[in-house]
Length: 84
Image 1: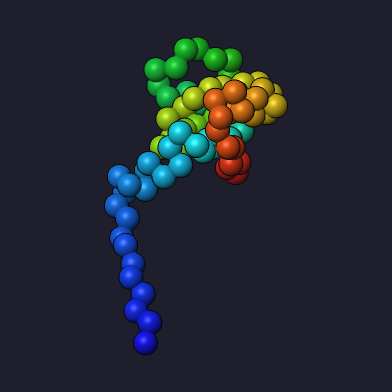
Image 2: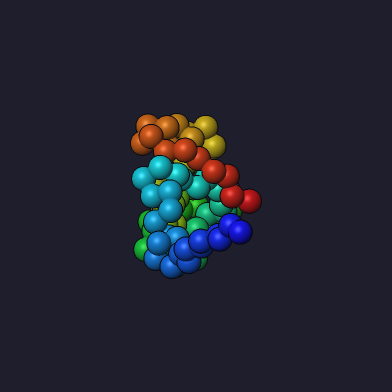
């Protein structure tokens, strides 16, 4: 008989999975960005931007082209994962 041991992971532990290694890439509308990050500087309404977020959801950078956001991740030794 084989006994399987499981470990429950807390929300705090889950928030740190991939920290420093993984970044999430997502296309985002500038209007949506303003609502998610109220302190952000004024950005023209209706723009499509690419946002790079840390594994815990903190914004890392914004770019007007996907390739620039991916390059930013590469420069910081981060593996990108796309979110839709």
